[in-house]
Length: 304
Image (cartoon, rainbow, N blue to C red; front, side, top):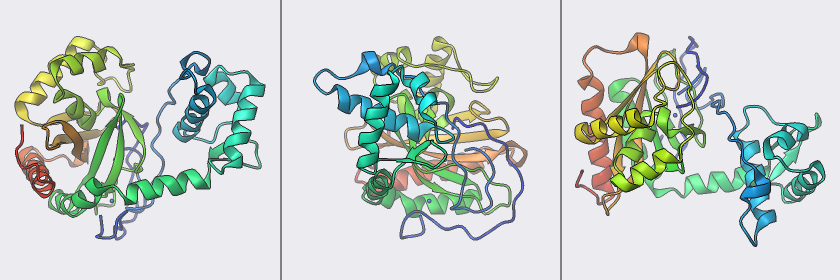
């Protein structure tokens, strides 16, 4: 969960959810279960001038610009986008104008850019149509009730994970995050799980392509240390993250496998360290049981 976060106390409120059956990723505290602050992710720097797909340069650049805007903690100005994209200002301005014409981005009165209404609409529909999240939602809700902590469901996107569901803790002190936020896999319990259960060849390929930046003093940034961590995760069947992306946050995670035995998603529990129970089985037992129930519903009852 890579975000600069601090937990603080807020007034408890009744949790609501993202999905119809009262369904709902780590970061700063929030006052409600379904109204949370954005996860702070450092935007990835991309040289659009050299990374465009041949034959689809304008489309590739436009998508990358949209991703930059979506990943920014605050709506960026055109000057910020010029620095990040390495594109000439006239080219960037032309692409932004085209995105705005389709309501994919929005130019605000203060001359900054935000994700547009059409992009949000498409994202909402994608999440609503996500069978995995719908199927997992009741089990995730039960897991949160059993542990009294925030739980998340995430999928992998390249070297990041993306949260697709969240159910918050009923406690006044909460971990805020947002569905749709991206987090570096190497600094997350869920992310490490999703890579650990790939084939050895694929694990090495992914690690070699990672920007293993340090998010806290506890972040694993050494290639061999991360590969060794993967072996431990494969042996135990679960992963942990101790303050690796956020100070004062402990996470536990495990994998949901598809019918081909490949990691399809990850389930996690996030706990403020001051509230962490000494007996880790109080988190691991319900976590693994939740995984098994979800996989059974998906017709993938066999766990690696």
